[in-house]
Image (cartoon, rainbow, N blue to C red; front, side, top):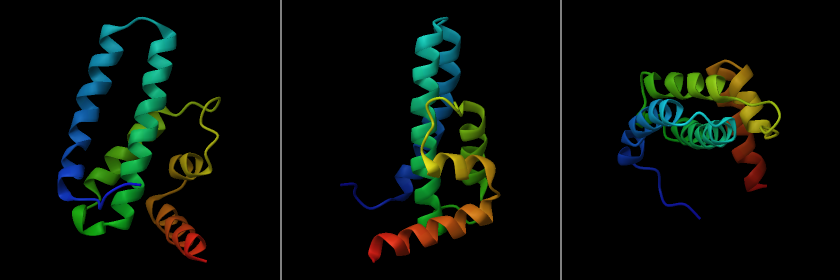
Amino acid sequence: MHGAYKEKNVKSIDAIRIFQENIKNCFDSEKINKAASNYITFFALHHYQELFNNTNFDPDYKHRKFLKRLINRNYDSNSANNIHTKIARYSPLFIFSVFNKLNKLRKKI
């Protein structure tokens, strides 16, 4: 489904910062802003999980903290019915790390 997570994927996190700033400034439509927030949440959650799986790309937690803030800022309780999103939003980093490891074990079984 997805290739191996690489350092260039970590660098793409900066692109979402620019996207978020531009989309909110360019459009007044609530529907477009909601769709953009959902996309940002999905993007941030994907990278958040991958950085927990590949901790060597983020040893100082800088990117994971930024992604957690993005998830918190763009979280929409009406559309975010994904358990991963809820846990990422409400739990500290170490609890999400444990959840992510347990989830990986569950998938192997």
